[in-house]
Image (cartoon, rainbow, N blue to C red):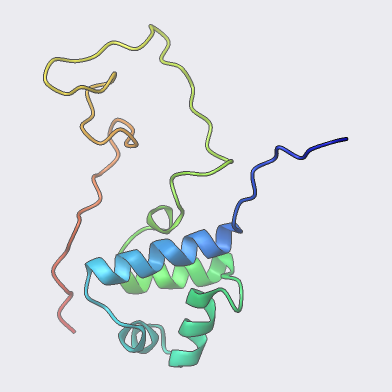
Amino acid sequence: MSTDVTPKTRPLSARAAEEIRALMGRRDINKSELARRLGVSDMWVGRRLRGDLPLALDDLERIASALGVSVDDLIPRTGTAQVTLPHPTGPKSRPGTGHPHGHPQGSKRPGEPRRPSRLTPVAA
């Protein structure tokens, strides 16, 4: 008897839609406002954010621009495609941080900007 131990993951498009919804929530932007900024219908936005239609790379680029973020901010940081490489000198904790590389946010790389938890809306 064979058992499949491969974890079942949601499609990247669905995980990106979840990131977009979270970012919209943090910025207090609703579906209608995003649709207005993109020049599309509410239905276009809704179908992609629900996963009825997958998000294309061009869609991600347009949505990122409309939200004032980079495409990287819309791609989930966790998942099967992420590879963690060991530090060349081994993990060493810096004082006061509790993280091997001194980053309070464990998923950030050196030089990578922090994602704000809430930004003020852009004046139209």
